Length: 189
Image (tube, rainbow, N blue to C red):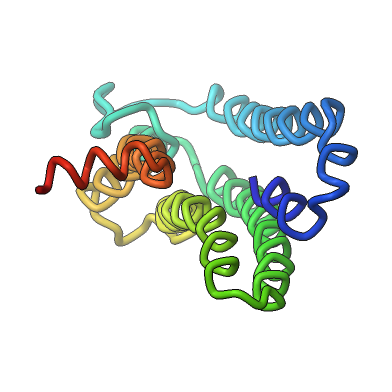
């Protein structure tokens, strides 16, 4: 979405020629393939774990860290692999998003009218909020070492990441819709 916003704001006349169906397929298929490949590389070693504790996972879903707690195998390799894979998977997409928004903010700064700046920035603000919530919970959940972190905090962060972020996503984007704004104003009066 940041690339879409970048093209729409920084290259509006070339938008339709750059953002064609081929580009859209690459932008959606690339992250999907990378995500599944990385997840598969983590699942295969876990399949060889020996489990000697209870078979009850103290979590909302079968996540890596609660599964490691059940294992009596050495999980240090998987933890290191998770950190090694998570760094580039965080750095490249977030770096790409940051760079596109730097160009967007530079383009917004060049707009002379206040309403033009507000309108242009409002097209990006929803995406920035959703990306911040999404990446913020991912950083807390997967990039901060789990040792010393309570199970309750891990569950709360997981709940925020898996439930609240997707739940707020349509709410945040729909608040930009003028019809919804009007209905909310009528309800409050």
